[in-house]
Length: 240
Image (tube, rainbow, N blue to C red):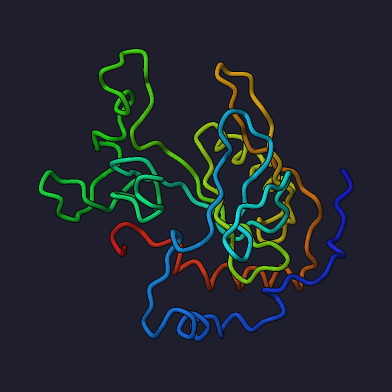
């Protein structure tokens, strides 16, 4: 495979001084305004074997696209748990979440007090915990997922892709292939499509591919962006 150098318009985030980002947050969110990954636009794997991503536009209206193109500046193992569904929660923060897949922070005790718990011993992460009354349902109430932070050419902040367990392996294998070629994620311009698996029932999985690579200068700038945003979006449970 021939690897080409990216020749498109310069990424908007590289046209700005990333050190000014805290000032932009303060101007738009107020001094001391907290921001975390649940404040960003999020995109999930479509249900029913769908082959299009549903992405919010500038006004928050859904826009259907076949592929997402950009640079993965951050990604991490996650666990996210809502007592109800995400829609029932109104898109708000989960009752418990983990930014490393190992330690969860949230309202995990019977009295509803906030605390930290090891995910491996949490009842909600055990197989069959989603529907304990159904012996044939082996799913977890709080399943292992992956959050992928994708910077698109026109954006200053990343779009968050919430990868379901069925897509985590495909994404990890792609990242390992990049590693074997010595390409760090912040240098790779990737194209994220969708493929349909037959099931039953039918379901969708992410289909990543390499489109091109940034120049060394642009890759260094994108790494600086990743390093600047990591404290906002990759907090550990102990610092949540």
